[in-house]
Image 1: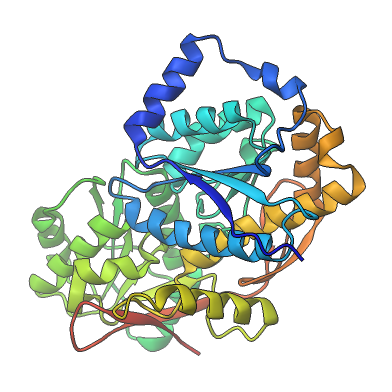
Image 2: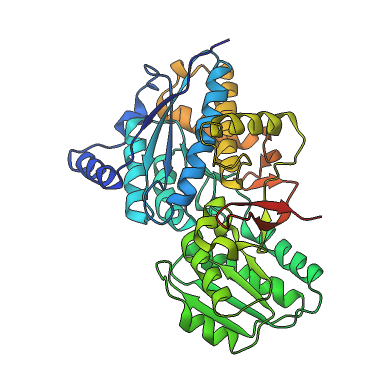
Length: 410
């Protein structure tokens, strides 16, 4: 058994990523490396591109934790048949140009596969780069419609919004059967938000609830008084938000401060404990659909829970309950690691040209069945995740007003 620690090389500057990628392009760097052998001198090369700076860093930090835990588990049990996985991590920032630059930089390094990027908006820009260059991508958090359809090399372990979002609407109506008037908010400059709000509005219509108002915002907005005032004038008894963590947290706080007391349903963009310091005590009671349950009693999830708790033990104030984004990022790394193990047994990586290894790895990813913290998953031929279990949670804030937990509802 290989007990080597995980090998990870970190890069955290999005501006450096862009500069290096630009330099590589100007110097004539191309796909010629794909014709050579897989470079195994430092281990089996895998890359991750996560938002570690900018507004989306609240997600990227959760994902970084999950990937590190999975990498430690994989390498601790022998890596890829005795070879450690060597992971390089690049910061994509929270915008599309930085994600594009990070993808190009990782691909030019000769990675066999990529995890990321963090946002759907970034994925629609960066994933086509990987598709053109024949590099497998496993998306840990891209829920917008159309991500796997970008091409054969694109897959995701994050269930699309159309599967998850309607569950929270149904739960809100179950808890509050008298709801008649819904107000909807979404960020019109974000691919995830614009895709999810369509799903939310259809779910409302399917229940006979046409929204009384639909308010548009921008990702970087901080003051929502005009939109909230216009919405509250319509006397809604349900508010539905398709926003990211920072703007969504601020929206919730301002909704409550301006007098709204009814139920609030939020989308996957707020599926992180990092919203707690933003909306604080006003987070209490919001409803959100989940693709992960810490209460799932499977061996894989129990190992994940124990590893997460051990990693958090160094910080007494940190949560001991893994967020969904951490579980999904762990799953993405697990999927790639197990697919690499199977591929290497069939066709040793050291005998394959890089381009052929990448294509064979993508085929192996799509053909596998995986026992993950999310439960059993597999993929459609198109790269869409097939997952059985989903949940709805209500946020319960602690007395300090800055910490809490997602409590699953029956």
